[in-house]
Length: 481
Image (tube, rainbow, N blue to C red; front, side, top):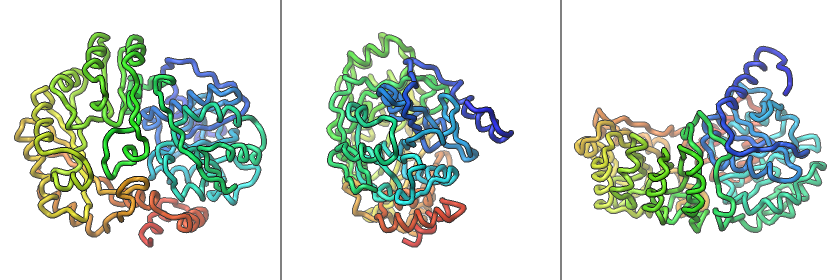
């Protein structure tokens, strides 16, 4: 830990230190290696704390013989960037590993690199610069932007990478480390022309038991131990990267969950759809017997049962589902396999279980949708109020086609068309519904980052390198394209 240089530096250190003060360790993590790796979550601490993958990577990397991995997060006010674990400045780390899950976080990554005088393009970096490494949910497929920005990209599940990472992660020069990474089948090293040969796949969750090494007092799952009970997804939604890139679905066994629940009184169950868990009734038995407080990450409407919802109601007040469209015809285009009967049954069961607050996610921006399809969102909200839900929340988001999905060849609809559709939806909504529309600008940037080719990526990074505001440049280039 370094002594603060001035009041601004002290304020930055204090913010990081307060974040760490709210953490409670459930596993001992030793940071003793001599190859220093900065694991960076490119957004605020609360999001980092809620991301199980981020904390698992930190745990796993510190199990390697020579690695000392410390965590960092992004804040707009930061200039020095101190680690959560020891308040060591990021400049002292040889590898900066970005946990990359959301396209819009690329803005924060660019800001961090610019503030630390690290060139944005990999070809412009020298031996004195850190290795800029990317992994995470957006690295299960190839994003051309990363081929221009990253020195190293690790594709897939980290667990099955660990033996080979242990062989290559040793303190040595930048060039030697890049050549060592290039020998890994799951790694891309663009500057050396090395492409990924195979995506790393963890076949057995029981072997590693994906449980967070700490409990945080902040974030979506505050005061809860995070446990991943499913990785991948059994469904075929045409818009979803998880369902297309992380098959087959794998599940943590009841025995492993039992060993965790016996030691902790509050857990957050992480899965693409908790209700897809093959032994759900037995899981409820286990959690009820253990008297564990539970939160869940997501639910599938056609997999709900009265028993599960009654169990869930004991632990949380709100019921959240992703319907995506009130139109069965549009859901069929999405390959969101839900019938009208299944949707209505789910709502009825939730009300019967005692939920008074419901949140529903919707998507719009399909070429095939009609004005009637859009107006049906308001009709659905009215129906939920008529069923007796006291609070009805709607999150309404434009379709953002993604690489690796069946919709990757689709274009995002023009902003003018989307705004017209938003007006139609808004005109249909009851006054009592609480509605949030996702920012069209942020959605457009998300699509741009995901879909751009390498030539546009080169142009973008060169312009951002010379600019004061990465957001403005990205927005301008996205509009021009």
